[in-house]
Image: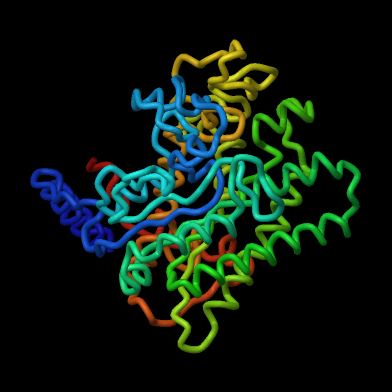
Length: 387
């Protein structure tokens, strides 16, 4: 038996050495159809729309140090690329997708309708609710063919503003009041997704909300030190529990062709804040740019003498609410190709290539993200000695 294993090991090593000697380059977009990417939501996905709605002609996100890593402050809330930029790159969309509100933009491969400060409920100042973003998409829908829209990817991340505002205005809300608010938010989210679906969209990627109580601005405002503010985390958890089931309802309709996937963004962030060194982040509870106990306020503001870290790639958060480009890239890779314990029921890549008009073969299952197991490294032949 030992002799057989040795032979297999040697053959495996030779295969590895052959591949390393003559590498095969596989591009991210290989085998992926040339379809569009549309994003909706808040500042996490805003490609620059907020700048067109702001009364301030030079809002902070259009000025350095935003865009620091690319030397290109262009209205995005990061030091460089945001998640949709990387997804667009994986989809072979040149130059990413433009903000929908930018005059004369090339919309041939999609657009960002997301706006900073957007919410699901209410009427945000100098922003748009998700419903208003969908209405904007409807007003521009003639730009794309029905078939193209049906095959394209729609990404939605929103809800942070709703829960931050609720917690500020209702600091003593009991469990029943919290539950009622979460239900109202998720019911409206379901309605707005249904509206997009009625307009021809059929492929949806909807990440769960992050642990909102772990944002540096929240830690700073609620004076929690190195701890997260758990009441906000609890609201995010309640919200996240409803995402999969509400999407299942659309996907299980006979001959509906509704397809979706959900990223467990909540636990992806938790892992990176609790075990930051494992992910090569050395600071995960404070921001790279800002002022205060967690450097969480005022990044880029003209009247604020904010601090700026020397090396942003060692930080998980760039400002008080948004991730660094390095963190955004990691999340994008999880969306596009992670295991089913992270994204379920399929990856974004699988979602894009899944035939349009067909019903899904798998659906969201409660606790599937945490219970589904993939082979561990011990299940495979260990060739580490040959690398």
